[in-house]
Length: 158
Image (cartoon, rainbow, N blue to C red; front, side, top):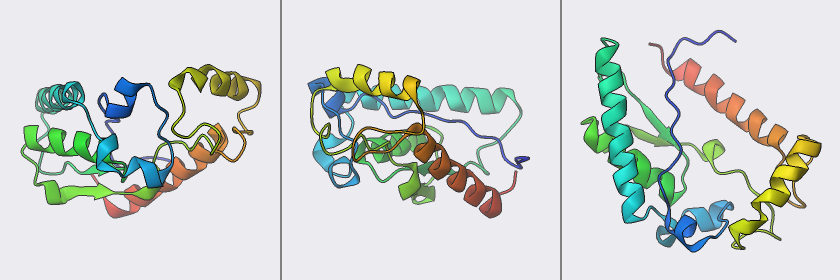
C-alpha cells in the first residue's frame, strides 16, 4: 500500500503501571486514570513533542496538518495531550481509536508482574500467529494496526 501521509509513531511515556511493574493490556483497565502517565512519563512526552516539532520544522513542514491518533488508554491520551500542548495543537484534534490499543496479553497476565514479558516474547518468537491464552498474537495486532492505517489514509492526505 502506498501511503499519502507521513507517520511519526510514538510509544507512550512511562506510566504508573510501568513504575509498579504491572501489565495493563485490557481496555477496561487501560482507560482508568490510575493507569495514566507518571510525572516522568509526562516529561518524556513533552520532550518527544519538542523533538517532533524540531524535526517537522527542519523538514520545512508546519504543524497545521498534524493529526494525533492514540488509543483510549489513559497513558496514551496523557502522552498525546502533552505532545499536542508542545506543538500547540488543539487537544480536540486528538482522535482516540480503539484499534490502536495495547496488545491484550490475556486474563492470566492482566495486572500481573511485568516479569512475565519474557514468556510472551518467547511465545512470539516461536510463532507470531499464536498469542498468550485468551490474548492477542502479533499477527492479530498487525491486522488491527493495518486497518487503522488504511482508515487514516482515507481520512487524511498530506
